[in-house]
Amino acid sequence: GYSYEELLKMSVKDVEVLDTQEVIEKRLQQIIKSGYARFETKHRRKDGTVIDIEASVNYLLEQQPKFFCFMRDITDRKRAEEGLVYFQMAVASATDAIGMSTPAGRHYYQNAAYTRLFGLSVSEVDGVSGPPATVYAEEEVGRRVFDTIMKGGFFIGEVKMLNKDRSVLDIYLR
Image (cartoon, rainbow, N blue to C red; front, side, top):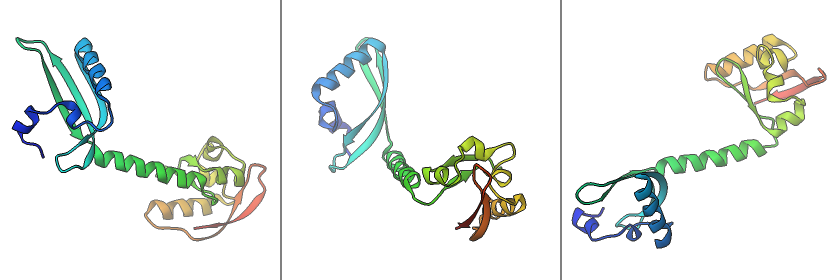
């Protein structure tokens, strides 16, 4: 929101939210020494809102030394990353067993509740040909569950599944 004329009268500290003047000066010295830096920080817009930015700074020695700085607003990306962290924590700490597989049916994630229930690691569940053959008592049922989910549907119902010692467990999928 700043005009070109306003920016010419400002210093980095006028918009920088996180770093002290000392940290800014150290960073500038490092850029002068190396000629380049890329980093993330927070800046304050003219209206007072704080945004996350990624800065790419080049130091050029010409007739008069200059810093060329390219900034990109990464606020949306940072919010999405934060939301993903909360989602990951919720899935990881859920008391329901949660396992995830690729569209090809390869098992790649399970939460602690899943590991406790089945007693199997991710690689053990994935096995040679994927979960339908390793954790479902009837492979055909496992394939039907996977096919339904991979087509965008959802499966609700009771199935027979196997734990590490191959004992049959009655599991309600939802």
